[in-house]
Length: 151
Image 1 (cartoon, rainbow, N blue to C red):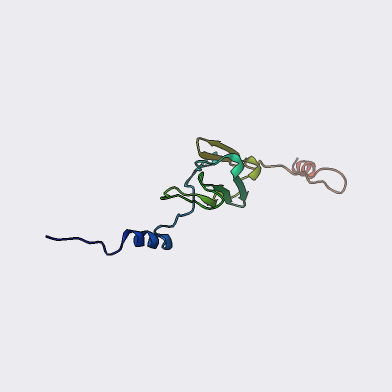
Image 2 (cartoon, rainbow, N blue to C red; image 1 turned 30 degrees about the vertical axis):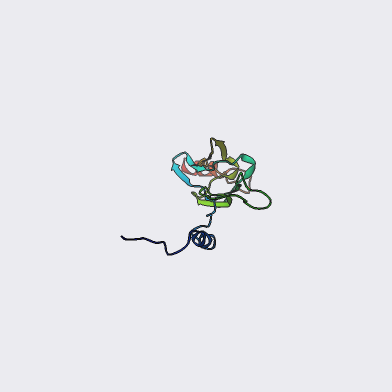
């Protein structure tokens, strides 16, 4: 008869898990999709359990940053007493995404529906050519002088 024994007692294995990264709870980092098209940029970010008050959005240069905190619903002031297993992720996060240059931070349209943060940033309008008139010392326009010289 073959007897298989475990090298460590179950309580020792659980104690080891507490002090190694295997049992550690990783921080929350929301996944994001960045879609760039001719009209602008759209970012979709999964932030389940968060509301608009717990998020901060900032666009500086070509970096879009979303900050927030996902709190554990069962956390108490004296710790997570009685918690046996934690697989979901919680904690503060900061997610920075590179976006195309020249986007206007004041034009960001943000919405939060069913745990999905959607950020729409339109492409800025292309600058239109602007004709500048040059005035001569006599108060006449340069264009008129050129037309008179050609006639």
